Structure formats: structure tokens, C-alpha cells
Image (cartoon, rainbow, N blue to C red):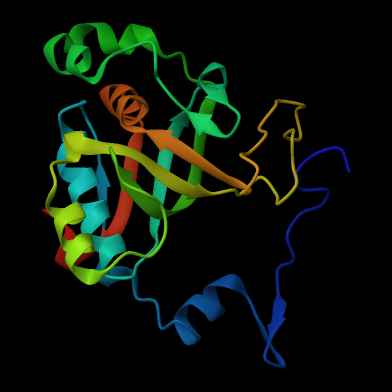
Length: 197
């Protein structure tokens, strides 16, 4: 296998002995209605705060969140998208430098499955601790955990670009990276409307 996906996905698939197109499945099985969701698109680094807060609230309620972002391959190492060369405080105080920090190779969409604040941990936590973590400022976010969509064991894309995930097969994206791509207008999430600001 040369890339993550050796062939195009099927136009139909079987689930519980019934064939579905992806659209039919979304309407029938999870009863997905697009009108119940809202796209939150960043236009500046400052927009990332409200977007992250909505993302945390949706995840705490049990939703996975679709994330679209600009990809900088030079900022992906060992499954971690990071703009570690910048302090978060510098991104806040010098927004004019952000567009020069990251050069983007393209865009990607993934599912965010968890969030971790500084000093926190991944995985299930008690409801009271979860409430405290959600209520923390978006600036306290350490990273989002992202489902690997390049394939479970993929190390390169179809074009031979290194996309090695972390050992557990997930990616993580730190808050400074989110702010940097937000400054370029290349960060968005889709959340249920009730969590949208």
C-alpha cells in the first residue's frame, strides 16, 4: 500500500444487512439533520476562543466534533500539530506576526474526540471534574485529540508526505497551532446549534 487510501471509497456499503449511500446512512441511522448543526469559522486568532469553548461543551455532552484546519506539514511531528516556536501569550499580544509563522500545505477535516486542558488527562473523568474542565478558559486548552483519517497504520499520504500518527493512532493539535491557523482563517468546527455562541 503506497498511501493511506489505495482506492476510492465505495459509493454504497452494507450496515446491518442493508445497503446505504453515505447520505442515506446519515439521514437514516443516526438521524442526522444538517439544520441542527452550525459551522463556526475562524476569521482571526481571537475567534479561536469561542470556537474552542463550543467544542469543549459539545464534547462534554457526548458529541464528536468535525474540525477543518489548515495543514502545515512542517508543524506535524510524531502525531502532534504544534506551533511550539511561539508562546500563546505572543500570539495574543502580537497578532500581526501570526500569518508569517505557519505556511500551509493544504486543508484537512477530521473528527475531534477529546480535549485536554493544561495539567489535565485524556479519557473519561467524573462529571464534576468534567464540568470544571469545560468551564476553564479556552486559553487553558493544551490540545484537541483528533481521529486519524489518513488510515489506521498510515505513515505517508498518497503524495508521500509523512503523516505518522502518535503510537495510539490519533493526532493532537495544540492551542498555539489552532490560533495560528485561525489567524489565517483556516480553522472551523461543526457543532450542534445549542453549543454555538
